[in-house]
Length: 436
Ligand code: GDP
Ligand code: MG
Figure (tube, rainbow, N blue to C red):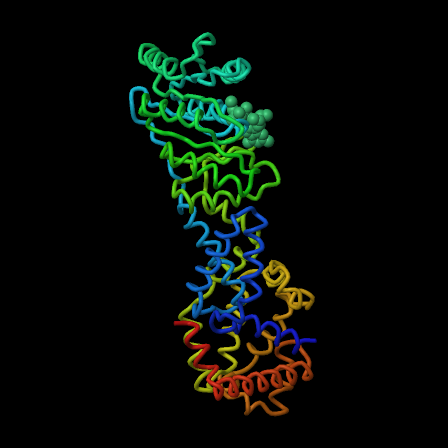
């Protein structure tokens, strides 16, 4: 029935004032759960949610979203910020620019070396690969196969057992043959060990790379942080590559690593094929980790389309008990501006269940609008003057029935009563604060 629909629509418009401990308690739990499920380190997940909640307390909730939804959006933005805000490029200065690739065995170093070479080659750069995994003949062969596939030269000396020596020769060769970028693929172990760390550290020392990238498998979850920490302590690397994001992993390691080692994630790897490489974009990753993209876009949509000045004006009128049918019409316009109402309500997972079951669509408002538009200015401002004959005239003019006009007038009266009570309880002031 129409009056129920209106009531619900008005509820969504009203918003709930500010973010408090109580009205976001469930959402905080949901967010923490989501982070932990996404493999964000437990301690980091707790710290981050506590910080975000602290920051968000007292924040004003605009109309059309719940405090929980707003908190979700704030969390999304904060996760984006925690991961660096925007993409950070790799440093390609030097003659040649040397990019050193480090990480555990199986993390995806060799595959990524090939991808990065391919990626840079496609940008028209002269690239060369260097095979410095001297322990496994198969590793050299693996890189050679990839090089052939993407048409990039691979420098290798299978008999040479000195990684630094190979790399130095490769750089000399690169200079002579006009290669501008040299990507050095290195050996890894199954776990962090002293010998591997010494070798990669001496490679870094000898080559002074413009970029040292630490490659880590996103599927290793919580372990990824410890590995990153160990590598960073010895290598002081410049950036992180997160691999195997094509799998089930939601990529929470991105947050933990960034927070613990304070180095930017620069690339992600999303498959075994040579083109499965992407720059790292914190906002996309935040969305993936939180897994609440729908809520985030709902809030963005509401924020974009909401006219704050108009809302402020309306709230002032509510406070002074001067809310009339013109204002009501303006509220309806605000709802309509936010787009298809069913879509909007449909985007709210879980918490919006109640609303979702209600049959509200843009058409629901058509008779209401028609009725209000059939009123004279005087009637809109002072609905009390709308007597029986005026009701008949309005019904005829709007193509509705007297019954529908009566319903709307009754609904409007009830609404004003609620507003009045809200004002008495200080709710009007709260609503007002919500807009400042
Ligand atoms: P390395 O030991 O660090 O050099 O690791 P590799 O590059 O040899 O990769 C180890 C395994 O992981 C290989 O089977 C790769 O094909 C696979 N791999 C590497 N990166 C990705 C990725 O982004 N997604 C998937 N699904 N597999 C990957
Ligand atoms: Mg390898």
